[in-house]
Image 1: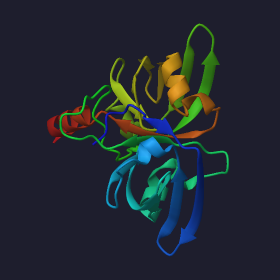
Image 2: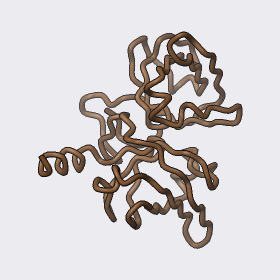
Image 3: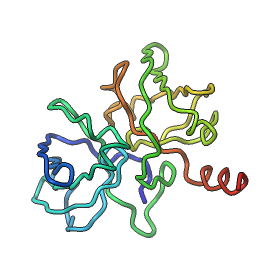
Image 4: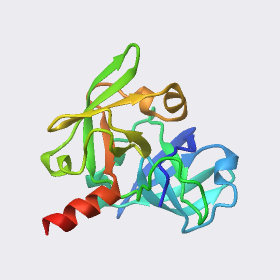
Length: 195
C-alpha cells in the first residue's frame, strides 16, 4: 500500500523489450533508494511495481503485458518523468489516502487551465464513474488528490504549488494519458452494495 504522497520524481530511465513485456530502469536520488531490496514495491506513476535489481541510485522493474495494457507505462518516451513512492511501513503517516497501486484505468487530460488555480480536467470511462464523486479522492499518476468537481465522464482537480513542484502533473498537456485509481474504500462499498 501507498499513501499517494509522491516522495520524489525520476531523474532518468531506460527501457528495453523482453519476452514478457519490458524491463524498466529508473534512476532517482540515492536517498530514495536507500535500503531498498529485491522484492520491494515501488509506486511508479501510481503503478505498483516490484524491484528486480538495484544500485545506489536506480532500480529495475519488469513490466508485464497486462500492466502495459492497463496503464500509461506503454507510452514511455525519453522525456518521461515518473512519480515515485516507496511502500508504506506499519506506523507510517498516511498523508493522502490509501492507494493500492492497482490502476483502474487510464484517463485522458482534456484541459489544463492556469489562472487563479491550476486545474486539470480529465476524462474517464463509464466503468469508473460510479466510484468517483465531488470531494472524493482519486490517485492521478500515483498522487492523492481531492476531486474538485465531477461530471458524468470528467473530473477536475485543483493543484497546489507544492503538488506541482513535487510531481509530474505540471508536465501534463491535453491528450496525455494518466493512471487513475479510485479510492479503494469507495470501490469496496459500491461493489458490496451493488452485489
